[in-house]
Structures are given as structure tokens and as C-alpha cells.
Image (cartoon, rainbow, N blue to C red):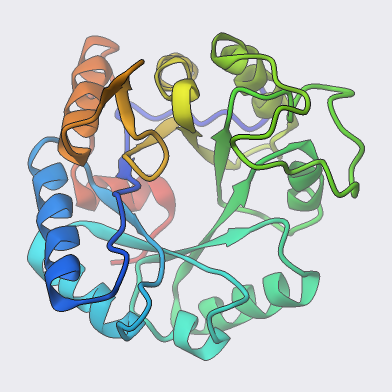
Amino acid sequence: MTGSPEPTGTVLAVAAAQPGDGTSTSVAELVRSAAGCARVGASVVDLPPVAGVPLGDLVTTVREQTGLLVRVTASETTPLPELVACGANALSCPLDASPEFVRDLRAGARERGTAVHFLARCAADLAVLREIPDPAHVILAFTGEARFSTGAELPGSDDDRGSPGSRAGEVGAPNAVTEFASAMELLPRGTGCTAAGVGPAGLPVLLAALAAGAHVRIGRADTPDYAPGTPARDDAQLVARAAGVAKIAQRAPLPPDQAALALGIKT
């Protein structure tokens, strides 16, 4: 595996269920959820902008009240100056964004000493990643569809990055393990990896990632169900399961200070 990391512990990132309306109550619920995840082993929270809430205020609130590292999901719908100035520990940049956005986000983040992680959903995204100088870390999102296997897609086609519910190229959640192995082979050497299983791919991807030395993202934004037909009670339930499995794998969850080192984040 060209890009497989070799950590002694596991960074558990949580993609928490997000508030929908930006009210103070819903943001408070997000903070409570993140704090609960921190208590059971999470060290990072992946945080998209919330409509109606200044991004910098949201990041500050979550950081101060949870102790978690905050990784903000960057998108071209959020003004670039707001993204780079929000105070996040890291920004996650989708590799299907425009080249200009990727370039400018990296430049702005570099000026502020903010880490940039990249989000890949298919082999075409990893082809883009290989053109970026020294990418430190990538988040691989697996849906249970054939999107990283050789010949699974045509790079640049409108269908390469289908939604989690898309039927095209679907191979089923158990084959997420095969997809994970294919993706790891495509990583640039030295690039760290966090794996996120979407929907029913969540558990097989968790197991594959721990076995391969990758870090893990879990949470209801990716996987609403704890088991087939059984919705997760909260995000902390999913994090607690991942933490337990990580301990069994002798890759115990890392606290935020050690997670920062593993992810190339300055604190």
C-alpha cells in the first residue's frame, strides 16, 4: 500500500448529525453531541458551515466547549476568506472542487498555518490528489459502490462521483473492504488516511481501516443506523463502538494532542 500510514493509535473523527436551521438551540445540540463523542474517544469533529451562524463563532464555540480538534468542511458556496479565517484546526477540501478553489484554499490556509486535508469519493479524485504537491492527509469516503476499483469509472464523467444512494456501479457494503484496499493502493506515498464508511458501508470500512493502519471517521452524518433497521441513538453510540473495536485491534483512540501530530495539525 503506497500511502498506508503506520500509527500506533487511531484518530476517531466524528461526522455528527447537523442542526438544520442554525438556531442557538440546534447549535447547542451539536455542541452537546460533540462533547459526548469526546468523552468516549473522539478527538476530531468534522464540521460543515451551519446556515445562519458565523463560521468563526461556530468553530470557537465547538473548540472551547468540547476540546476537540475542529476540521471544517470547505465548499465553494462558502466565501474563501471566511473559510481560511474561521479558526479551524484543519480544512477538508473536496477533490472534485474546481482547481482554482483547491489552489486558493491551500494558499490561504498555508498563510495561516492551517492544515488542509482532502476528501476523495472515487478514483478520479485520487488522480487529482496525485497532482497536488505533498498532500498530507486524505479522507476516503466509501459508499459500498465500485468507485475506487480499477475500471470502475471513467475519470471526468458526470457519473464518477454518484451520491451515496446511486445504483450505478453498486457492489454492496461487504465489498467496501475490497474498495478500501483499491483506494489505499492509489494513495501517494506518505499520505495519511482517514476512512469514512457511508450508510451500510460504515462497519466494514471501520474494520478494514483499523486492520490497515488508517484512521476512522464515524457519525450519523455518514451512517444514521447502528445496525440494519436500528437507528443510532446518538453520535456517541457510534463513536463508542468504534473506540471499543479500536482497542480490541490494539490501536486505541488517540487524544486530541496526539491526534494533531498524526494529522499534521498545528496546535
